[in-house]
Image 1 (cartoon, rainbow, N blue to C red):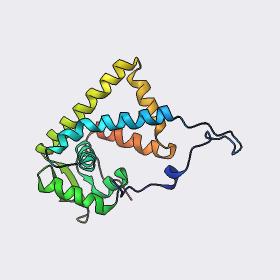
Image 2 (image 1 turned 135 degrees about the vertical axis):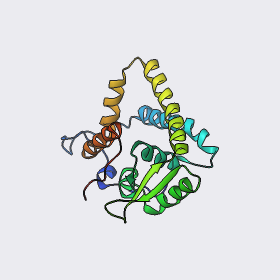
Image 3 (image 1 turned 90 degrees about the vertical axis):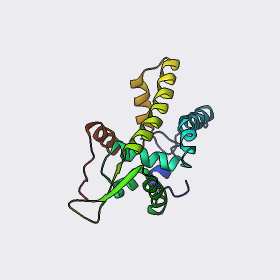
Image 4 (image 1 turned 180 degrees about the vertical axis):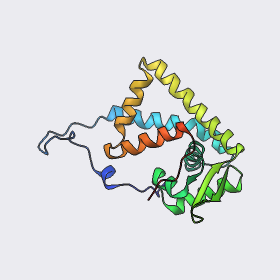
Length: 185
């Protein structure tokens, strides 16, 4: 997807360790880990890609459906913040999901300019099918690697830019508690 918005922090190269001086010797690229990450991601999203093909949907549809399912009544503005995509990109994907009956959109109660998104039963079923495929792959990988789920969580969390970790933690714990509530701006 070409319409990804990237913050300056995520554009900076990390050739030196945090807190290290600029004179620190640059490590050789970890090509094996980089390539394993590419291939792992390819296969992680590949399982759902095959299911999404039935609906002529792509990965953008998957991401939108995932977060709307996890955060009922999420504001469009908050979804844009999470996905880091343009309004134009989201509009096309959202229109297709709404037209095919996977998501409904309604006005906010307090502010009628807000657009709140919720999955339909059909959308919830598809989101669950996709999540189960990915959960099965994760479970197989953890079992096959001899590592723990906690170790995997720590590794993935450490891959997130430090300045985004608090927001990510809040987002994933909010999803576990129930519907997201609009936050103050």
